[in-house]
Length: 105
Image 1 (tube, one colour):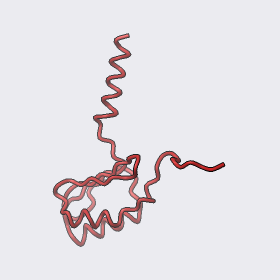
Image 2: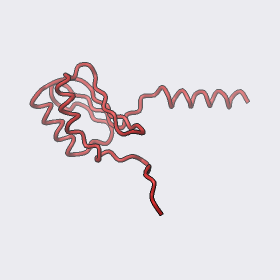
Image 3: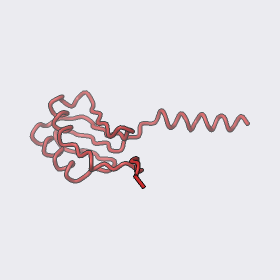
């Protein structure tokens, strides 16, 4: 019985503590250094263009929430660049895993 409680505690800890973004992008000196996750092509093009015009280093993560997507930037990314990336973010390009709308029958 004790092992069931331990396994449940480990699973709950994993669900709460582990960082699980939908998309993670690392920038170094105005270039896309590392990409992990689904990166829509038009968004990737726009972000690369922003990074070329205003070179910066840092990290961007996109999280899926119930209310929609959330963009999180590290402190190294300037506020003006963050806003430009938020302006070109395609909310329709990131699809949720389930259909959350009610259908009339």
